[in-house]
Image (cartoon, rainbow, N blue to C red; front, side, top):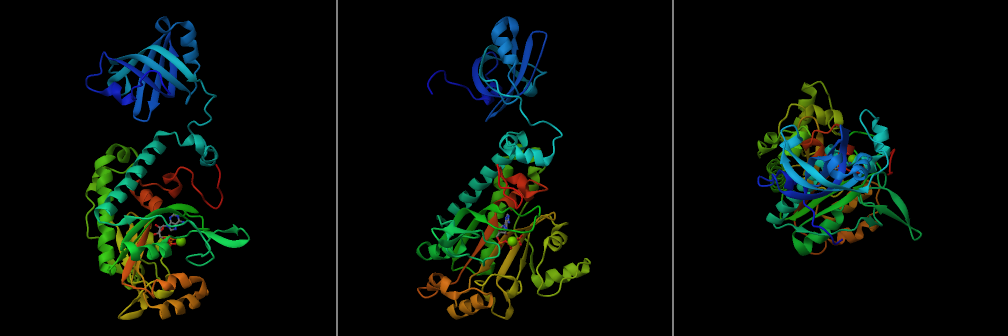
Length: 434
Ligand code: ATP
Ligand code: MG
């Protein structure tokens, strides 16, 4: 669009702006008028500023039109920046002209409505300051992850999201018709990342994963953003060192670059700045001992659920690795521990303060016969995995990898009660619209 060059709202707060003309455009956050003066709180991507307009300056018609702009209506403003201690941020823009772009219908969202209603109106609810702060932290988090992988020479690759294989077994996979044949939405990109590892040695991907999770919990979505990596020539120790460095890098980057948003959402940035490696590493066997002492007995071989993870991490200030899980609890591709065949070289990273699992990691088995046997044991048909087993037939090397739930990490970092608050359009068993 040609025409006047617009300023960003933040321009009004620059040190040299007082007395200067500005041209702004954006959305009305609030408005009121009294005694022939209109007060608009105007929002754009860079912030909010108060705009005042006088009837005798704007003219009666323009003033009336501006007065009828609804919350979330759109306007363009020409005016002059003035210092005003009564205004938010100590500045205001005194308008010489207000052009209504879209006066808008009455905005349906306001205080004290139910969560269900807000979810029905999610496409509008995401304009709130809280959502905007969340979007910014999430974007910065993704940037920080990519920056870290780049620094560690891990190549970003693009695995498919639909496939004829259900990577981790059928129960939690979304199945659909693919030109008359069954297909599945990806639960993990791992098998493809393992294939991509051989030409690239170190790879990662950021793709949506889909889980037909029956359980409705505050940490499960049916679609989430999955950050997965595969690293050649790595054992469990090396893998956990890598994950630790990554989490610390991301926490520090967020504290550095998004302190205002973090604080507004309830996470003091200092707490992230204080995060340091190493994170405690606890074997599954030790974890269940700890749990018994806390009055939550777990039989050897049983999985750690939300309650157990919460009990392990409630008092913790840093994330905790739980390692060496019983083999039956974990996927077919995990490497058995060399001195204890009942366990696998796997680890979950649990976020502190009770938030629980944020990363699942393991060394991958390289033995074709054992992998085939494990597939059979888990009820899968090894023929369907023949392409995957091929990877063990041509230059197989020790390697390991992990999957991290982006929204899980964000839920911990932003201290959100429910994971849906970390994604604009949450997908849960009861909702896939808007
Ligand atoms: P959980 O036991 O919590 O269901 P999982 O063991 O099924 O997790 P993995 O299969 O190891 O999880 O997936 C890797 C990572 O993906 C998890 O550590 C978690 O961060 C994230 N994740 C898994 N399922 C979901 C989900 N339904 N919604 C959001 N994130 C998820
Ligand atoms: Mg799960």
